[in-house]
Image 1 (cartoon, rainbow, N blue to C red):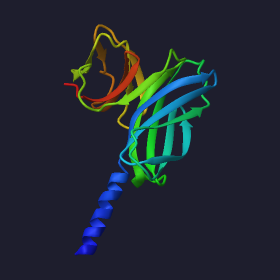
Image 2: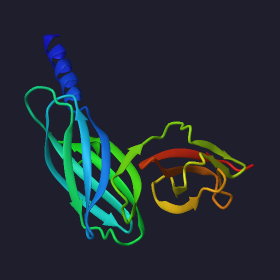
Image 3: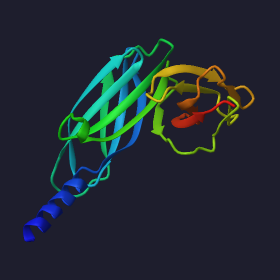
Image 4: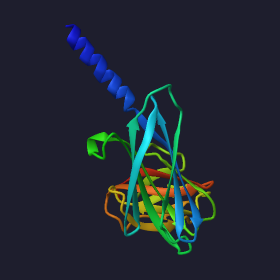
Length: 205
């Protein structure tokens, strides 16, 4: 019985140690051929940054950061900066995926993930946040029309897997999605220099 309780306590402590979350990701340019991605993470216990790796496939950038357990008092944030070779003078839209791992680069060790998009050239620091909950900025499409806050100038559309499929300018608070099949899509947009993504359900009548 004592052994079972001890094992249970060990498992609970391990779950606590692995409680690491991505708080914020921001993107800025270092030079005409280099960008900086800043990753802020929040942990229950002390973590150390170990290593990172990245891949660029067409316009999708994936960054994987690995953290290992540390010892000592609790900490609030871990900040890490990663520099990538991107031409910031060209007009492009990039899909960014950031993943935080614990101990090993394995799918079962993935602690948190955030994704969004940014465009170049930069006009300043772009802050990415991820939200798949309901947003006051949007109303789910009705008869193929997405209703949108008039303060938002442009939106980017991604499929459910995060693949970029198009962008639209905001015209009088409406965006027509009649040419897309019914399904779930991701919508990305800037508002007050903050980039946010959310899910929409497209069902044309």
